[in-house]
Length: 286
Image (cartoon, rainbow, N blue to C red; front, side):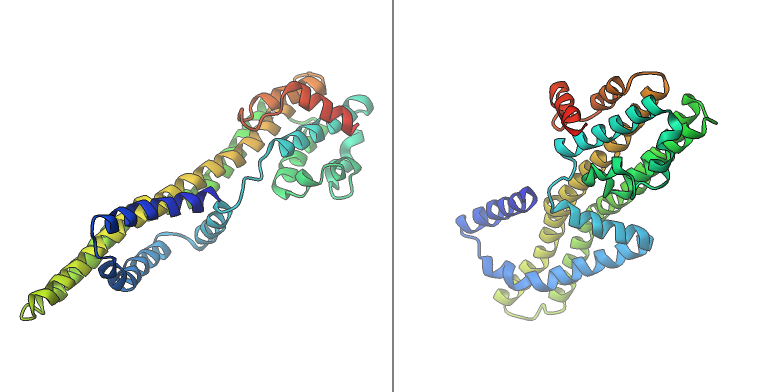
């Protein structure tokens, strides 16, 4: 919603001031379709050449997600922490082998079923169960698991950052494509040098619209979109860091109630539940 509001506000300010100062908006509107096709067509072609298909698909998905609200809310994080508390408490009371079935079949686990928001995200479930499985096997110590977790989180971060980098590169190229469109317009104007001055003036104005559009699309649309995608990517990584911190605290001997406090502390302050909120939520789920 704020993405659309910000875009509309920018357009109203830019074109509103232009019209207020006596600008002829008809000149811009006449040249707009042709310049847009030139600039966006060249940009999309370059984008396809510059990125693998998996990055292109991830970018389309990321752009779609940018228009939606964030799924990483305080309620989701409380579910995540409560899920970890329940499964660690079960392991503490009944032994690590007691959670083996929960780890091997999370879809059938009563513990995971209590938290549908988190258990519906297979990436998070897979991350949790993979490292719980290692804890059950007992073959790795906390330092080895931490190193492995860091490597997986770095991989996830690199994959998630690829669409952001692709959109940022596109933003950097758009002004140049605007210049290309403008140069073509100037070439067309020079080829019609025998026309009346009014006609030549209109053709030059249309050519300058290309430069204007390239810069506007780059810094008014695509680059802000890349920034928003990057913020959402960071939110996704924070969830994995929360799981990592909680499980490592448990491996180091802390009680489940203390381990989830470790995990709570790594969350962003805007979405972090308070100690009392988390405690009441955990007690309510027991």
